[in-house]
Length: 251
Length: 251
Image 1 (tube, rainbow over the protein chains, first blue to last red):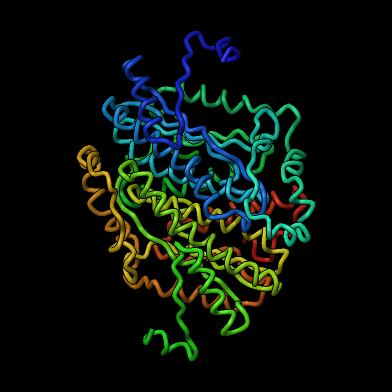
Image 2: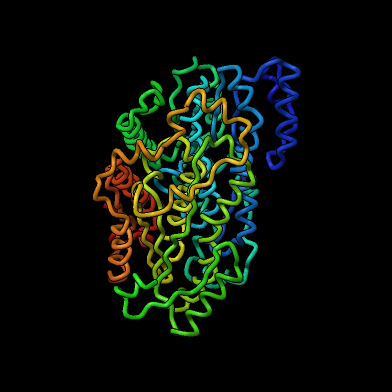
């Protein structure tokens, strides 16, 4: 907070547990009571996993889904009635470059949850647009420093199968992040992602790009998005829904 | 079953509830006891939804995730120990063209679950390959006839917000499938998807394409996959994991 106060003249933290609808509702109500309006929601909560996908129990996947995906649904259900009533607002979603192109093995549940959230963002984008609400998907590459993402990653609960995977994939299991780190320039700074969010917040409504890529590893996800978003735009035109596209819907 | 028996000389149905680990374990154990081996798993279970994404409760999304995604995890956890011990096998995943490119609004939870399953399939593909297990992702377009997918779709549980969405999106909410149907040739037959699965099953191990598209509406998803899968392959080469690619990993 002290660090952040150096940059923001008027910064207030509000407690919000994304695994609780009551907490999400209370946080949004608090902001509205204090400020009379809500301009933007930034979906940034997310938890990392590493390990063989098979070794994660369904309960572990459900817990990860609860934080990384249902969390966004709870916050949206708390915030969107107000944004819709205002006829203005912005949803920012922190996705991942893993959703479009390359991603290493043994980060399955986490990358799967990011793909889920990215798809949810794309659906919401069209469903809130006619209420005057913008959407922006920020797509960071792998930043192996500057966050505690890898440090706090969860491991599989079922360790009975680990020996079989170790035998075939040992070196890779020991550190998927080390191989990624080799791709990433030493000056890659996770703050670039926060800067992108700030830039998006400052842009006038209707002018924001649907996707903003921040990927120092140059994994090529911009290339996939450029194609995917044009195909998506083409689809909307074919079904007569041109009005659900914005100036920034595709490159 | 009678219909199917005309095509298969030796067809046996086994009950399997994908929402129960016990049921998945029992089904796989039954097959192994009766036949001594298991050659392939086809992940086809999935449930459809239509309606504003905001109006689905987190519990509804969790239930859909349980069927469409955790179901595949339960079946994989039952089947993979045997496929890994065999050093051979095939995972077939029924994805959706909505995961790569165009998808209409108001089918959010369903398309999100398909994107989730598609990402899970891509992670599993690399993690089981060194055990000799192939993966094939089948990507059907929208088939508005030949299945009960749209007929059995779930609606949002929260109807309090429906009026606001009706006001802005009324015609679209009344029938997202009608607009899609206009794109689909009258002779589009969902059996083409089953035929693709049969072809994949018959192919020799190691030769199968990672993705097989069956999309009569030509929504352009093949174009996105061609780019995405090449970017994915390029990523694996850059991190020194060329061996996790197969002849069919990309076009």
